[in-house]
Length: 163
Image (cartoon, rainbow, N blue to C red; front, top):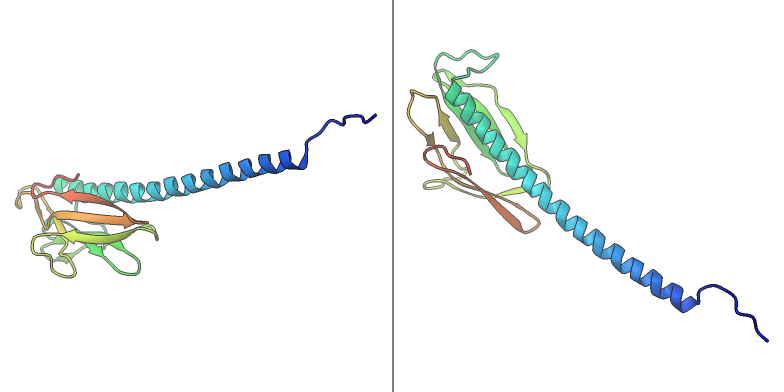
């Protein structure tokens, strides 16, 4: 008479291993997709925050340091598209430009299209004007960022609203 030994058969082990591998692969794919979306969302939030920083410095009339500024006209945001997409914020004064502060996009994120009135190449900077030197902004429109086939837009209106 044969005694039954407790344990699992080879087929049962293969089925369990296959199910675990499938769950693992689906989980990794979902995480990768989620991570890519978060990289793009973070880049969009950083761009909006940088635009608001330039807007706030202009509205408060904050003069650049250490370069002297005779008369502050505003703060400009310049977009640099290329191998390493980035943008710069710098003071625009009557006697020239302040030292730029550069912000780089993550390596997987690119500027796709910057729609401004009659878009030249490269696109003109967005200038947030100092209170009392005009209203709103010079240079406005949509800034599109893309990553892994997904595109998100940041809009700057004529009145300076950032959305």
